[in-house]
Amino acid sequence: MIHRFVLAALLFVLQSYSPNSLAQSGYTQTRHPVVLVHGLLGFDSLLGVLDYFYGIPGELRSGGARVYVANVSSSNFSEVRGEQLIRYLDQLRATYGHSKFNLIGHSHGGPTIRYVASVRPDLVASVTTVGAPHTGSAVADALRTAAPRGSWLESTLAGFVNALSVFIEFLSGDSDPQDALGALASLSSAGAATFNQRHPQGRPTTSCGSGAAMVHNVRYYSMGGTSVLTNIFDASDAMLGASSLFFGFEQNDGLVGRCSSRWGLVLRDDYGWNHLDEVNQVLGLRGLFASNPTSVYRAHANRLKNAGL
Image (cartoon, rainbow, N blue to C red; front, side, top):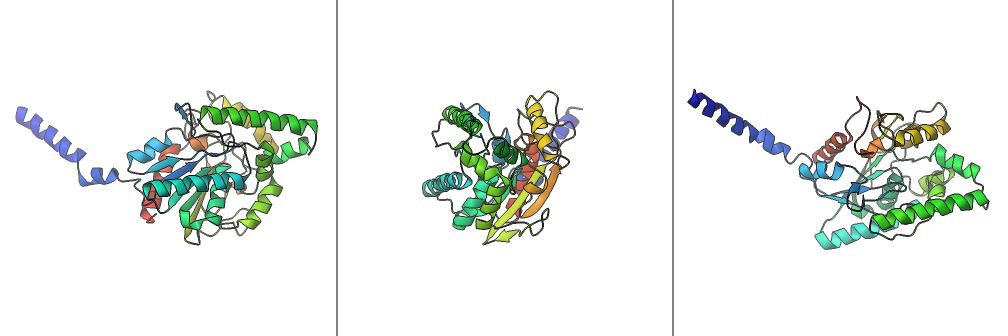
């Protein structure tokens, strides 16, 4: 009986360290590092406790990926945020010798990383946007209409968002300049249209289609969600439920329309996520039957690895 027990234990140990198990440890080990880029009113980590991409960096690193989390202005023009990201990438390259990066941007992080790929393709192996308002957001358009240029409401709104952005930057240990009206301009339909004319790489060929999967040796991917009220215990759902009303009958994640999230090779645009679920917030709360965001990011890192990126 003892011999059988020992044999069973030995078989268990051997299975645990089988070639397949060992191979799994390199599942997310991409050739180039992964850089995560936050959206509007975002951050890398607040007080070193709350990560914007909640649980995602650790999940990618556990499979062998080298992961960096950028911190750019919480609110500003896409181009300004992009220039900040370029400086960060140049710093990483000078310090660690990296040649290129796999950029993953959520929300306003999407146009931010597209700007980098457009003006500095030498830094970029791939661009992946998640819930990004590539053609603008109906929420930004509604705010622009409600707060006309030069009005007291515009000044009040800008002052509040700028103050909130400065506070977020303080908690994240940074001091990037903030420009709420710049962010609003970039995220509006008109601002997005102008931006897309200047940086068209990966733009869909139809209003709700897909775009080129590779431009100037940079791979382009996108994904997004189309659910809004996903978990009754998530306090942010109420806010997103209210903002989703601006989209009428268009499918959306609470802040970004389904078609607006599409760019380059569309991996999927209808995950059961709202805008914060896309980065595993708040604290990992999501719909009961929705895909696990950390698993989706992990699978995408494996996709990048298999593509030699």
